[in-house]
Length: 434
Image 1: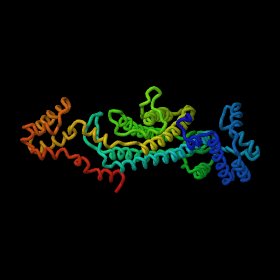
Image 2: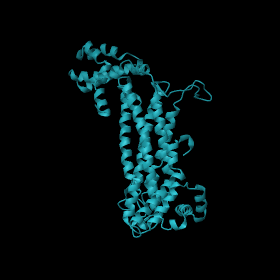
Image 3: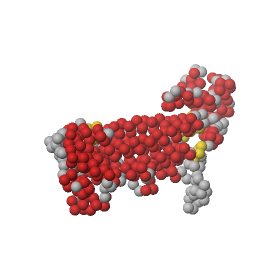
């Protein structure tokens, strides 16, 4: 991923240096297990660990690979250069390249999930803080983009919190799904390596042995992982889209923090654009585009092919780096979001009580008017508000059919905004706990 949308911690996880360090640890732990089984001399296994203090020369490995055309062989050749040919002669004993590549990839994905979980937690903390801050800040709810009934800004943040909390649970499950390793040798039969080696390597590296591998770890695990990242990205976009709407000039219920010296447009000095939210929408698309390739990686020829390899070399770092950046961008955006309660109240009252139409409808039905007639009476007066800018309550009070069923006091009571906030504490308890 380009530096513009990258954070150093996640970038470092996908660096060649980190990858080769993981490869080394897999090979060294495998040597320890082989020595414990008496397959190789203990001294040879111990000698391999001398490389733990060395920095692998990426340029040298690339130089070797230019000749061998095989990345794992290039690495093993370089490892032998560091520890000596005799010490290295039992390295990779009974193993195949996928034992190293797949196990290492899963280690990277697990570590990436841990970094992403920290980002999710920051987003959750920001959403929770703003939810409680604006628990009772009234705003108009919208369906189809049209005024519906009153809600609160706190409920808006709370529903985003609940969605992100579900995403956190999904990410934990995806992490567990991909936290397997395989040291099973060619075509996965353990013919040339004892299953105890796999168990030891996985234990030392925080993985679970893959119950049955072929020559590769099954890719349905990875498909779930990347699909989960895509769902999280869509959750990010859900928040960003709401902020983009709220920042529209005609709405202006909230806006992104506009820092001193910031410019909104090269042509129009007055502009303050929702650039961070729009950026998050675009980044979500980048994460989601990994899903179809990940799903297509599930079907491989027989015990293995490498059609998945080039895909994963791209989507592994790109999706995790992008999502990591997006999570922290969203958290900062929510933390500093500027909210305008007065504008929310003005928007709510823009159509002069019209948003209380359902309360009047229900009151008429409870007063004995049929639902069909109740709807007709309410809609008749509501259309005057839409078409002539009339005041809804005034029109109802002047409608003889309405006042035959409801007294002026009963009509007046139906315009109490507090009616719409009476269960907010219940909803908050469901979302955040007692």
